[in-house]
Length: 305
Image (tube, rainbow, N blue to C red; front, side):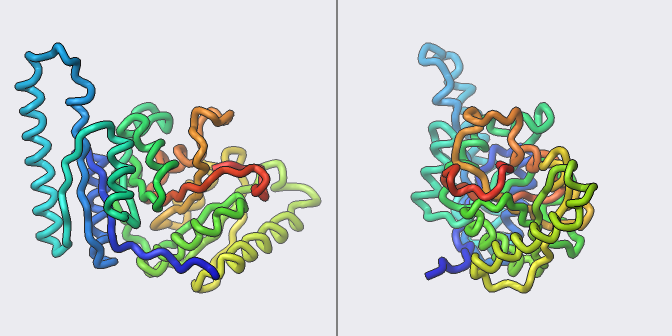
């Protein structure tokens, strides 16, 4: 029996009170309002973990930071309640990745939302390695508002599509269900996208390959048994997959990009910069990721998100 389309009833926003996190918070409010969902606002206070034990002189300053975090968290909770959203504020200690993942499990979170900020292009995200670990280990979808999306607004105004980019890995069947849920939530059409190498764009195979790939995209939708309107199945070309996805989303004024991501650590990848992080850093709309176990024998195409 096919798993039902995911519903978002318990939503988590993890915040460090940065500008990126504020943009993610606005997105969280929008999603909660649309879904009538409960919101958990989480801040992880890491100073106690990182401060050396002999730094007694820093305790007063640490306490000041703690009080500031409590105050900022209370302000966000008040803002959410003012919007009519049922919410809970949680101030947690420890390391951010573990605290976020533990909270997701304890609160039975259906959707986690993070804000990111590119420090050096696409190579770093806010929280350091936190975003990378959460994206790959979270048992639920993760909605990430990157720096370009934060500048453009948390949920863009144009009546654009949800773009589901796939490499035909069979596990993307789960990601397409999340894409379909957001299509229903946003009232948007679904575009299924696959990126082909630039070398196939011209030549004798240029007509046959897009037709075959389009049929493959249609098959992915069919096998997902997802109750959605027939999607637009699109093929695009690019020497850099992430750029091709971002360009397609920008050209079509996409409201959201959906990607499946491997659970394997970015450190284990032979790709210098992971496609998913390039997309998150450069996209002008939020990016929804869903992690799945990496099993090479299941892959139907060479591309790896």
